[in-house]
Structures are given as C-alpha cells and as structure tokens.
Amino acid sequence: MEKIERMLRERKEALDELAVPRELGGRLAGALEGHESVKRRSKRWLIKVAAVCLAVVLVGYNFNTLAFYGKQLIGYDQIMTGTLRELNELGKGQLIGESHSFADGVSITLDGIMLDDSQLLAFYTVHDPRGDVNSINLYPQSHMKGFFGRYFMSGGQGQGNEEQTEMKWMMSFEPPFFLERTLHFSFAYRGSDNSLEEGVISFKLDRAQAMGSTLKKTLNQTVALEHTKVNFESILASPTRTVIYGSMQNILGLARDQIKGQRFRPNMLTMRLIANGEEVITQQGGGMSTDMRGITFEQSFDALPADLKSLHIQIDSVSVDRDVNETVSLDKDAKNNRLEILGQAVEITGVYKTNGDTFVTITTEESTVLTRVFLMVDGDKIGLERAVTDGRDKLTDGSILHTRTLHFPGAGEELALLIERMTFTELYNVRLEIPVD
Image (tube, rainbow, N blue to C red; front, side, top):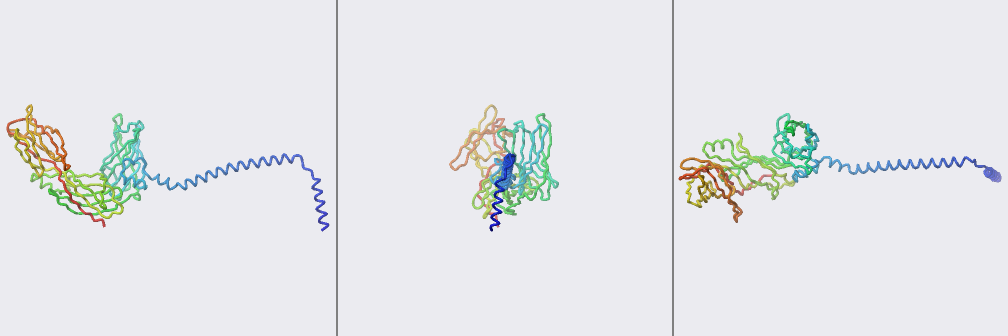
C-alpha cells in the first residue's frame, strides 16, 4: 500500500512540473472555430432535410385530394346539370386533353368525355387569344366517326368567359358501338380571311371509365288517347340521364291516313317522369321524327334516384297537326259565329274589307292554329298573306284565348273560309306504371 501511494505522489509532482507550449492556445482556438463551422453547416443541412420531409408529409397527406381534382373537368359547372356536376366531382368520365390549332391561333381542345349506355358527352374548349370567341365560325361535324360507323350529335350547349377568350361546350352524341376503340372528332373553321380549315381530334376510348346503365327495360305498353295511341317501347336509365323511347304511328298507318285524306301528325308529346312519387324535374330534351319506321319519339330526363322504388310516366298533352278540309260560309255583317272543328272551338268575331283586301278575325285557344287556310272569293281560292295577333285573354281556369286577324289579298261578294289543316293540343291526365323490379 505504501509503495502505491509513493508512485502516485511521484506522478503528481511530474505533472505539476509540466509546461504548456505557447502554440497550443492557437491550435485550440482554430479547432474550436472549425467545430463551430461544422455545426453551422450541419444545422443548415438539417433545415433542408426538415423542409423536404415536411413537403413529403404534406404531399402525402394531400395526395388523394390532388389526384381527385386532377380527374375532374374544370370550368364546366355552368353548363352541367346537377347530376353531371355530381359525377364530375366524383371523378367520373375520361380526361382527353388533346388540342388542334388553326393558322390564326384559334384552337379547340377536347378536354374530356363521359360515356354510358345512353350517350357520349363531349366537353371541349374553343380558345381565341384575340378575345373575340363569340364571332368564331367553328362548325363541329354532326357526328363522331369510328371504325364501325358514325355517332350523331343530338344537342348541346356552351358558355363563354367574361374576357371572351374561351367558350366551353358540352355536346351529346349517340353512344358508340361497344367494340369501338378510337373515335375521331372533326370540325371545320372559317377564319377571318374567309378561308376554310378542317381539323380532327382522335382519341382512344377507355372503356374502364364508362358508366353503363342503371335500368334498362323493354316496355311494349300502349296508351289509347282520343285520336291516337302512344306506344311506349323501352326505357334506358343511365348515370347521366333517363331516356324513354316510343312511337305513335307506324308506316302503314301513315300511308292509310294519307290515302284517306286524314293526315295526322303529332308535333309534341308532353309527359312527366315520376320517380318514388316525385317528379324528375330536369327534362333534358326530346324529339319526334317521321321516317320509314313511322312516327317515333324519345324523351330524356335527369338520372333516376339511386334508391328507386316506383316509376311512372304521366302523359299531359299531345300537340297534333290534322287535316280538316272544312268550308265555313262567311257573312261580312255577321259576328260571333261560333264553330267547333275536331272538338276545338273557333269563333269568327269579324269580317271586313279594306282597300280591296278581306280581313277575318278569329278567336281560339292559344294552342289552336289554322295552319293551312284559304279564302274562297266568288269561287276563287286565295291564299293567306299574313296573320296578325290582336290580343290574348287569360280566363279564370288558366286557359288563354288568342285573337288573330287573317289578311287575304282579295275581296268579293260570296266569301267562305276553307280550313284544310289545323294544329291544336289535346289535354290528358294518363299515368302509366313502369315496373322497376
């Protein structure tokens, strides 16, 4: 133990006599300064790493939101129905983003499409850097072309921005054949120098983005009305709209009426669609045509509710154009001559002559129009020159009486009104149930 204590004392004395070199202070100061520089560089690097990590966290947190908005069509809210806006917000449809530019800088961009079993909706932007987009003469083809055929346009609408640099359009086309893979959207443009340029945007269909149908039924139900029958053939409901197809007369019936001189042409069929006891408010369009199939029609409405329990078609009215071929003698001194033609009231309220012309004043319901009428003057047939509206009177039951003056260029002693054809509206209250199971 004593030996160990003696060795410790000797070591302590040696350390006490140790001298510090004069250059050691400078070396230590330099070392400390380098250490601070390393700490500063390390701090800056750590800040950068933290920023990158924060960005990764933010992008990762919002990745679904960025992708969600990236799948939407931008700028079409004003021309979309509520249903289409909802589908767009859900990212339904296929983005295209293909453009074609013309020589003067005007361009057209096919932004995207929505496709289901009832229609193909094309969304495209017309851009004019000159700020005069409303004056652009752009003529889209009435169809899109595919390998298996052409798919015709049925209608659409557009809206420009305040700067008049862009016009957003939404057009509806027939749904393409299920084997189609590439479609061609063609258009022609007449520039300021009156030259005509043609362009085409081709795109591939992504069938994975198509939405199919929600209800598809063959109806084959007939409703007998007073002067005709309405055949409801089928209904097709898809996520974008609901379409009812039918007919009112076949080609044999058309030929028979023509031979008999009993021409019957429906102009408009007014109906409503009732789903779960409530009217499907938005009626998107419709049409009626006469061809080799006869008189056919289609009516399109908004999409049906997802929880569909009941569905009805309500027929409200039919506007028809019918042959009359009836002659009514006119007494120029007689007034308030009330007639009934095909169940429609026609009141002759005045007949007078001025400057060698004859004027006949009649009052009918607003929807009743003498579409083909002549004046027989001393046995001669004189055509109508013009009809002038004198006034409209609304009755307590809501109906409106329309007074018109018919102007015929000619006058004589014996006068008669020859009514060959007239248009009128027949009102109905007929409801048809559509099975939904």
